[in-house]
Image 1 (spheres, rainbow, N blue to C red):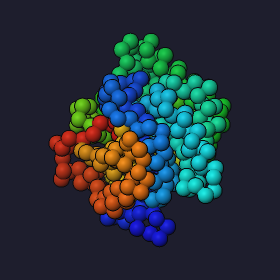
Image 2: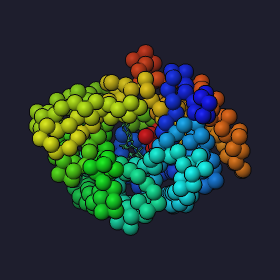
Image 3: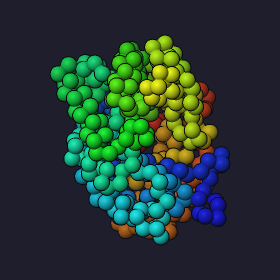
Image 4: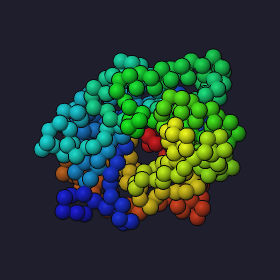
Length: 350
Ligand code: SAM
Ligand code: SF4
C-alpha cells in the first residue's frame, strides 16, 4: 500500500479500473455470453454503488466502466451517473480522481435521447458491441429468433445508436466511441472484413475480441478461437497495417491502417494474455468482487453495503482483497484447464 492510499497486488499491479455491473439482465442473448433471465438477488442500492466507486477511487481507480448485462436496460443507471457527476465536480471528493467514466452497451437501446443524456451526465467514452454486419449473422450472434429481418432491425438500431452517440459529442477520433466484436470460428469469422470495413466507413476504432472461456454455458473450446495474429493477417492482406502496440494496462493491441483510415485493435486474452499488468476490479450488480474475469467465485461485499454502508469496513475489505490478489488465469490456462467452474460473463460485465 502506498502513502496516498493506492494499492498494488502480489504482482505489483495497481488498481486502475473499476468495472461495475448494474444488472445481470440483457435484452439480447448472445450464445457466447448466455445471460441469466433473472436479476441476481440483492442488487446494490445507489448508496452502495457510490460507496464502491468511492472506495475504489481511494485505492487508486481512475476509470469507472459501467456495464451489465445490458446497462441501458437498468433505470438505476441514471441516478448513479447524476451522483457520480456531482461528486466528480467537487475537488475535495475522492471521485475527483476519476479521469474516465465509460459505458459498454450492445447499442440496441442507444437512442439519440439516451446518447445525449449519457454525454450530459459525464460519460466520457462509449463502447458499442456488434459482432456482424450481414443480418443473418447479426441475429445469430445476438441469439435472436427471426433470422434476417431480426438481424436487420438490430443492425439498424446499433448503427443508429453509433450515429446518435457521435451526434451527442462522443468523438471517435478521440477514442470516445469504439466498436467491440467477439469473433468465433465458424460462426462469424467471415464477418471480420465486413466489420472492419464498416468501422472504417464510420471512422470508429474496431476491437476484435478473441472468444473467451468465461462462464460455463457457452460450450467454449479452443478450436473456436480465432487467434489475434490470424485476424491481423487477414486484415493486413486487405488493408496493410502498422503495429502501434498495447498501452500499459490496456486490453487491446492496436494497429494503424497504413492508408490513414484509422486504427484497429485486437484483444488477445487467449493467445497473448495480458495478466501481467491487469489493473481491473470487477464488481457485480449484487456486490460480489472479482479480481479476474476467469475466477470461479467472487468476494461477497454485501455485509459492508447492506442494509447500510460501512465505508471503513468496505475500504478494508477491498484493500485486503487487492493486496492478496494473485490471479493470472489466462497466463496459466494451459496448466489450469477450463474444467473449474467460471462465473458467467453477463454477470461479471466483461
Ligand atoms: N451488454 C453489453 C455489451 O454487450 O456490450 C455489456 C456487457 S458484455 C458482457 C461486455 C462485453 O463482453 C461485450 O463486448 C461482449 O461482446 C463481450 N463478451 C461476452 N462474452 C464473451 C466471450 N465469451 N468472449 C469474449 N467476449 C465476450
Ligand atoms: Fe447481452 Fe452483452 Fe452478453 Fe450479448 S454480450 S448477451 S449483449 S450482456
